[in-house]
Length: 294
Ligand SMILES: Nc1nc(=O)c2c([nH]1)NC[C@@H]1CN(c3ccc(C(=O)N[C@@H](CCC(=O)O)C(=O)O)cc3)C=[N+]21
Image 1 (cartoon, protein in one colour):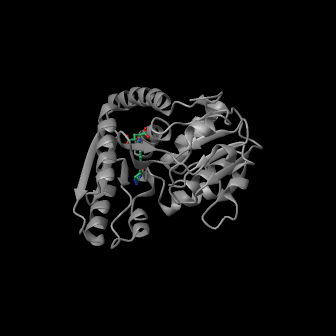
Image 2 (cartoon, protein in one colour):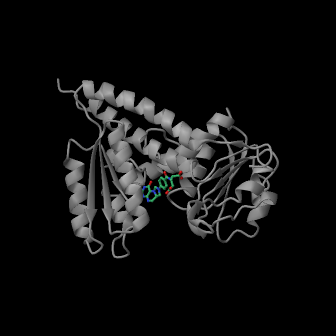
Image 3 (cartoon, helix red, strand yellow):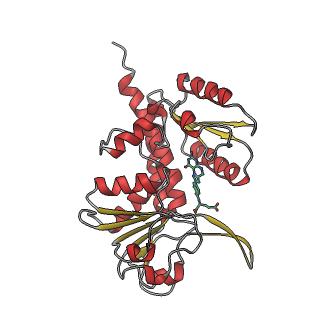
């Protein structure tokens, strides 16, 4: 890295979070509750298979109960919904994650909305989406935007009044990210494929969140000096030394302008998984208060 930017070490922050979560899991287990996460993967997309394996490993490492359901690509929507209903009713399972993307013959929204909102550790159920949209704090928050917020807070104690620009408006990252920033008092701009001049919008940002899915999209001259840049992109490219993973930000150039920047890998990715564990822990903790029998 060239100039003055601080590298935001998401991997290290995620490890600290994970250590805390492991201790809290031990406390819950002593009370007879083992937090359980079910991951459902439909199809055999190689990238998804790797992510799912990593999620299962990390879930077990913090002492949680982990189940992984791997279904063939031609699984019917009805069969997938039946599995979700069974997981909703399973008292050993506190969190359910259906890995996205799903095959095209399955309606994503129907599947996500079938998950018990209290077990929706991805925060993709329409009820949790709605809670976040109106600024309620009692819903589940999507893991990647939540991880970005936790990293931002370490560098900017108060987000209030800051100008935030989110590049990308997916339901998984861009939109929930913008809502979280708005709820913290930022002035928020979301750019997308129809935006006339994305670079001009980006240059206004004190906080720049990049979730476009386009390798090296954000160049040095897109970034206001002193901005904090969070790179959500994960792009597999064939480099000179074989395949590598790069973000949506041209890291070296942007590091010359930014105050702080997340690397890829080792930035937002590990935080996503730590937040998934956090949400699962939260879902399991809530059953303690709900399930009191008098
Ligand atoms: N329902 C659902 N929820 C998800 O949260 C979800 C999903 N579907 N589908 C796929 C994406 C992708 N995703 C990642 C999580 C962690 C890393 C991660 O830990 N990356 C590491 C390692 C990267 C590598 O070496 O592959 C890093 O950036 O340092 C990456 C990607 C969660 N996703």
